[in-house]
Image (cartoon, rainbow, N blue to C red; front, side):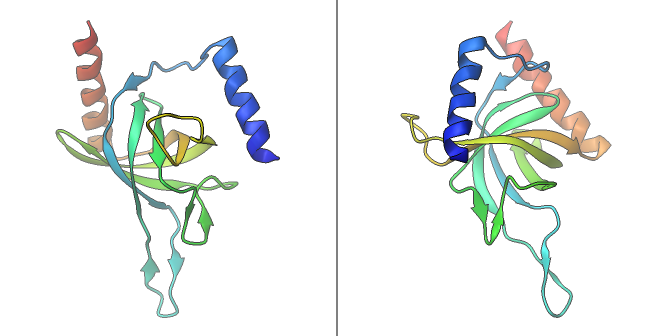
Length: 145
């Protein structure tokens, strides 16, 4: 039932238009994603599972991520109060960020993609990584002019 509701909302959003505040730049970049608070093993070491995916688009405040599955191990990627770590592979080098999922949908009707699209808001990153990320975004905007 939740999938049906998400599908209806997604189609409605296409009908009324996209009202996001930050301009999105379509670009396909590789990333790895993990749960921000990994489970601890019995010896106290953190167990970090990762999943590979690619972006659909980027903005200064968020990203659209394409992943092959909506679960990572026993964890749902889009749970309540769930934060994720993303290592985004920019042409100028990788940047690490913590993100908060805001929505997702299955790509069942999509012709060239399979899996899930997850919309995430950037919750934090180091000053150095933010500078690298914003500088890269500005090169995408300049190319479109």
